[in-house]
Length: 340
Image (cartoon, helix red, strand yellow):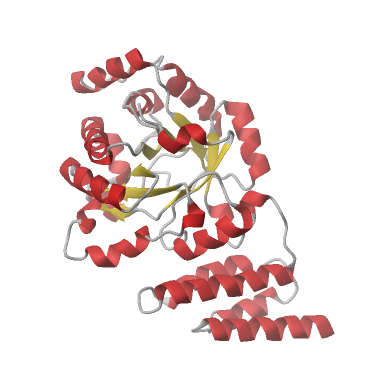
């Protein structure tokens, strides 16, 4: 099995979760600058779209900077032959790895039989993984998934991935149906670790899937295992690793308004607002005429909270249309705060 850069990472591994219209190249640049995790992922991109006439519009989600390495391209879809072609494309783009999204609960993605829908079709999931590996060559292939579709089903689903020759597996500890509406089931992680590391459970789906089980048990080369869901800090992540035996944790929503997350430092209000301005400038430089400035507004809600005058400043920021306007609003706020 080719685990590539994954074998070189120091454990416990802290990873930045891929989040659409959040973890773009501009935000990842700041995260790498102020508190870099062991590995980063791009926003997920459709393999079908990357092979269509609309490819150029999607390629923006594959932009990355050198300070973000190791950087993994995340893709989704339902046609194995498309994964093989896109994997070759990702190799040419210079990425460090390829991750297949097999957990997204978005209704549009599920309708395409992609993302979390793969959990309901293990045979197709394995065909997608093998096709991706063929196209990836020496690049390591990983999967991000969930603990089941309509119900928890780790006994059947997790062994399918454990024995598929993957470099790494990230498990979001909720079902597809649960989305993010319930607390993550971290109590299941020790059992998932046992399955991934020990291959002690065999999937009960088909002879095709059992063929993969037998093949991987012979090599006995366990993939890296990351847990995901509700973790708010590196300290908490390390506790989860100690408690469950997994190799690391992928953090997602905790990164909002907090590029310092992986450095475990607490910035002052002034520092936070100055970095928010920097974030806005980077977004504007990278995506002017490409992405809507309104995308930045979700970040402002996260940066501007928990201090006197935050509500009033947020209201002003919601009306801004450029980095200059954001800078003006912040400097005015800081001036008033100093003289208050």
